[in-house]
Image (tube, rainbow, N blue to C red; front, top):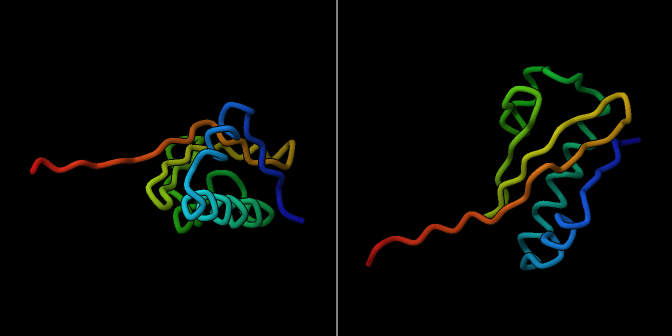
Length: 92
C-alpha cells in the first residue's frame, strides 16, 4: 500500500483552484511518489529519477506547477510543503 499524501488546507485550496490538467498532473505525480516511497528509503539516489532531491526534501515540476514535499517514513506519508504556479512571460 502506498504512502498517504498530506497537504495543509491552504495548499488543498490552491490545488483545487488549479486548471484541471495541472491539478491532474500534480495528483498523478504525487501518487507515483507515494507508491515509490513504499520501496525507496529516504536519501536513496533513485529518488532522483522521480523528483529532484534538495536535502531532506523532494521537488518536482508538473504542468506549470512546482511542488516541494517531504517523505515521513515513520508516519508513512508524503507531506506537501509548498505548491505554486510557474508562469513565464517573455518581453514582446
